[in-house]
Length: 359
Ligand code: HEC
Ligand code: HEC
Image 1 (cartoon, rainbow, N blue to C red):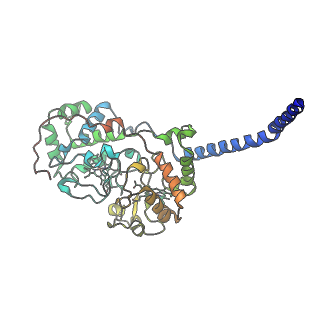
Image 2: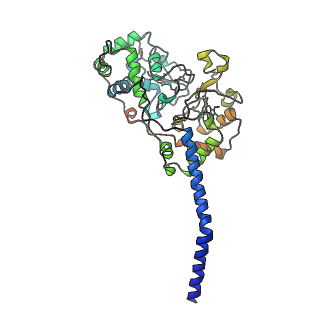
């Protein structure tokens, strides 16, 4: 009896090995293959994140980064001492201020929503309408813009000259320069600091080969992000930031977002009719932790922003399950806050008396 049983179980085992085994192996391999294909597609769309965004023209030195970091957190670069870059690009909000529209010197409201400064140096240009060619251009022109309210660059240079510690830090960062404390060098230093604000996320581990760095939901979201063609626009190492597109390819964005702040985007810079309503395609790294959304901060929830994108950019009504999966994927793009950003640096003391009282 026991021998009959044994022979039956042997037969069973043989059947399992010969017939069922390959079927099982096929489904496992099919899953593996689907995963490998997905990663391959993703790798083609999203090249590896560089360690930093330095270039030959924009080198990074530790001295420049150190100086740029101080200047970024120093409100004495504003006309009344009320406003630093970090007033609107706060560490605790991942380099944004979490406001619909930022508040500047004199408590004036900025016309647009503040994007994060993380990964931004990877983008084709700066600001929603691309009015600045790079982070250095942005930092320099910001000084005399409405955010900081300085009448001219010289007044900022004079103020920094008078703050103990800054002249030496500028000299170290720009050795041999005839006039180290200058608006130009301030911009180069802040730019160098911003070019370091690039930290890999779980998505980068996934791209590098670690499949389970993303959950199966997140991978399903990535697949949808590719299949629904979000990647027509949001691609590149920054998951966007590579060019400009109309916001509202299929229908007016104003109706979809209910914005109260009409804005023609890149048209404001070029005055070309072809640029009406074009905006820079934002990079989506850290998007899950940087609400509210769009150039005007008109949408609070990421799920709603994804729905709007489906409707006005792709003419598809995404189902809630699809939106949830895409949002799960977008969450995997959240990296850690850069260590040098999380902590406010010690600033040189003294030298500044506000010219008008802060509000
Ligand atoms: C009053 C708030 C405020 C201050 C102060 C401020 N920013 Fe911004 N920042 C914004 C807003 C709002 C935008 C978007 C403006 C637009 O696109 O029209 C922005 C955009 C940017 C961008 C472009 C990001 C992108 O994705 O295009 C960079 C880079 C930047 N700021 C860096 C800085 C630096 C450096 C400083 C200090 C020199 C600074 N900001 C000071 C509010 C501020
Ligand atoms: C045709 C190009 C295009 C396509 C396709 C597209 N987007 Fe966008 N996306 C944009 C542009 C341009 C903006 C900026 C709109 C604005 O605020 O002015 C944007 C903004 C966003 C934002 C808000 C980012 C922020 O920081 O405020 C999210 C989220 C987003 N897109 C996700 C998606 C998803 C998900 C898909 C696919 C369902 C998608 N996009 C498809 C071009 C596109």
